[in-house]
Image (cartoon, rainbow, N blue to C red; front, top):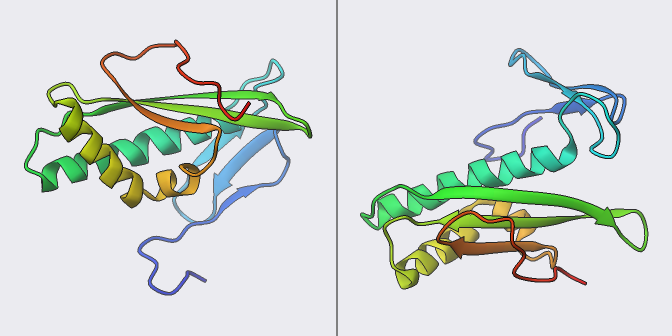
Length: 149
């Protein structure tokens, strides 16, 4: 049963952890092989799922905000997700890099701030010390912060 007011409702099922398939219940027909990033096995891992979810949802939200402000909609988002040992188990380190090819820093920051308050995936992640959203001129693998260390 969907939450009252739900605009979309789905169930994703995983029956075997990081071995086998995760699938969407019903007639959507989406099924993905899953695996762990820490072993050599085929399949999509949780790090990739988080990266896909954040990059896709956040860039869509950025473009909606740009459209509302009558700005060109040409943002790009690249999300890096790392898994590292934690005091108990593991933790993810997430770095979302956002490019605004034709905007000045002030306008880009205003769009970013609005999108952080509107995107449902960003809302889930933004308060976590291990998650960073930053405006960049070019995508890079260089670290700019020590996340939650």
